[in-house]
Length: 104
Image 1 (tube, helix red, strand yellow):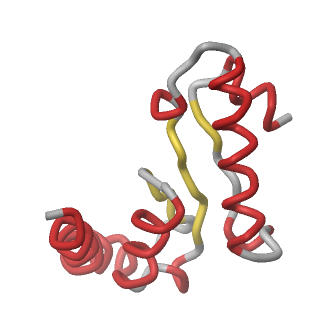
Image 2 (cartoon, rainbow, N blue to C red):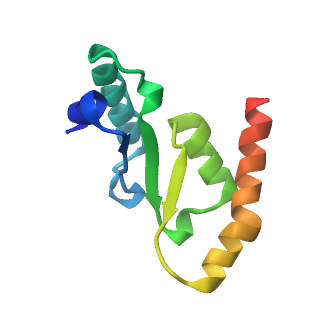
C-alpha cells in the first residue's frame, strides 16, 4: 500500500498509537519516497500527516516528529474544548517556534 501511496496518492496518514516505533514511520516514509522517485514524482509532493492523541501533543514531541520524521500535519483526536483551546493557544505556537528555530 505504501508503494501505491508513492505512485499515486496525495498523502499518507498513519496513526501514532498504531506504530510499533518511529522506525516503522521512517521505513514507511522511505518506501513512499522510493516509489515516488521510481514513478517520476517528487516525494515532497506527498503530504505526511499523522493522527495523534491529546496525550501526544507536547510541543517538543510534535517538533521532533516534524523535524526528524517528516510530518507536516498533525490531526489530534477528540473534541474536548479545553484540549482544543490548549492546542491553539500554546501547543501549536510553541511547536512552530521550535521547528522554525531548528530550520533557521
